[in-house]
Image 1 (cartoon, rainbow, N blue to C red):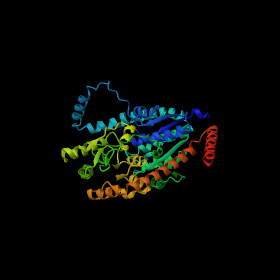
Image 2 (cartoon, rainbow, N blue to C red; image 1 turned 45 degrees about the horizontal axis):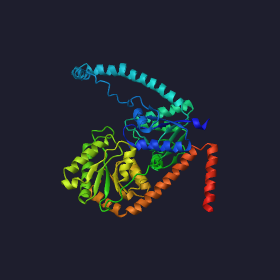
Image 3 (cartoon, one colour; image 1 turned 30 degrees about the vertical axis):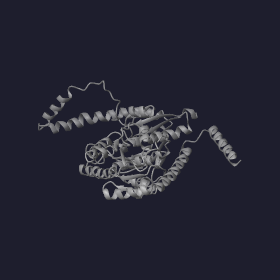
Image 4 (cartoon, rainbow, N blue to C red; image 1 turned 60 degrees about the vertical axis):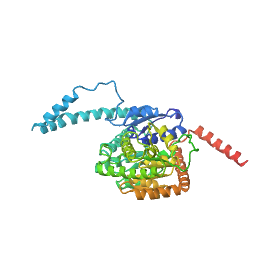
Length: 453
């Protein structure tokens, strides 16, 4: 095969505004292009239009219900209110449940089945055009949305790759939760039909082994640790007495968001405790900037926290609190570089802080966050989102500031080790062409000779 004409599909459940997922795809793309500069990459995502815009590669839908490009020119149907009224009237009839069951069995289910078959044919055409299919990492081995969401999607594409003779790699994926038995079966089958599997942490490997996956699988750092982040100018002339704190709230169990088990009381408690902590920092003359690594529904949490803070501070104190309007990874990194410390609940928010060597206080909503902090030896600066309070985070933050030099040194060392491990992994999976390998060895030998002389 001509090395210059490889075509690789990068599959991830991205497209909803999670910049951690976008950074995962970018990190994998960077690593592959560094070794195979002429490779052709295509994206497989939940929102092909968004993926094309953000990553500049051809992109296709991984599910039949994936988002379509926005069509502002498409008029809103004038029959929608009429349909709603008719549906309300029909629901009052005794025969309505029977009609609804008949509609589901005779019309909707066969129609959905036929549409899925047509979509599978299109997916098969795409897979057959590839040389490699890669599941790009991130926490994709989970049953959020039920077995027919993430698990079925991964199994579907893996089986199509197997039928087409296309190698399929699961590259540093995270696992859990997997509560549903059918979800566990789908995930186990998908991994068994793949050609290479690696996990991003030991707990993910243990979980998947527990559902029956017995093949050998490596553990490597999350792919985002291999991301090359551009340097940004940071103003070092400001007074060091006033820290710039980055606060990144998330829509944890917010009933307005469908991505969580809904619990208004849990969400309200989370925002209230963040508010108390942020107020104490603002009144100690620290500056606060609200931001998020998830730019769609986390904006709701940012708005709630921002309004609560503004209503409880004097005018002069309120001036120390701002919120960032982030639209992409570049603006996110630029904002984070200007911060002294980070408070976040997002997994990749923690990873980004490590990459930029920013001391981070993690408020963990999931074991993957606490495990991440433990793996870098910083679990002392991680608290549970369900139980943290003002006294706890104030104490943890005090130690964070006091030990920030040691924390930065540990983060820098760990991040360098993670990068090195990922380099070796990608070197093995995507080896340089023979001629390029020889040139690389020659350059390394000359460099060593020059160093010795």
